[in-house]
Image (cartoon, rainbow, N blue to C red):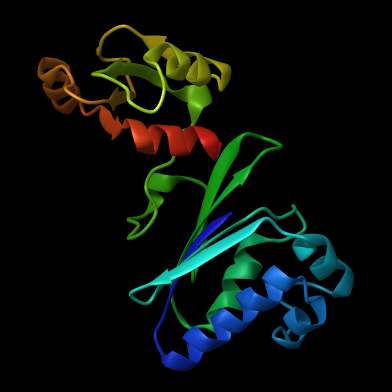
Amino acid sequence: MEVWVVPEADAGRQNLSDFLEALAEGDLEAIQRRDPDGLLGDADDVAHSFESPELSWQEREGVFTIRFVTFPSLEEDMFAAFLSRVAPGIIEGMVYDTRVGEYSFFDEASLYMEYDERTWRYIDKPVQFETECIAFTGTMRLAPREALEELAEDLGAEIQATVDESTTLLVAGVDPDEALVSKAGALGVRVMDEASFSEAAENY
């Protein structure tokens, strides 16, 4: 799960920081104290959802970016309601369900199954490898192109030698073929740099 929270007040920023520290420390009692309405469920639900999470978070210019692994018992809409109570403001979240290989998205008000159902301030459209047709151009610096192509294939993508109407993603390295980049733009194909592609693959 990835969540972006922009609290509208200093109190909200402090409340959210306190919650994240309790989450990082595995202090389930402290988490429950911050949830008097039981939005996160009962004690067993909290323990199952938050025990030993793989958590990372940072705050920059008032925007909290939170990433962690959770369990199906944590319902996205209830978690959004909890965050709205703890730190009222802007909330955007993205969840990848490994059981079905699909993303869902949420904000402070609703749960969305598709990215295109609304405009997002902080969430970039995720790469869904099983449905992607990917072409590469330019020199790759983080890994050989062949290795990146093999990685994408292993994750379910189809690799293409060039850009056409079926292409969904063009990964552009250093000194890319400008004709391919222009063609991608004309066809509405998403263009992503190597670092962003590698991060998407790593987090998939």
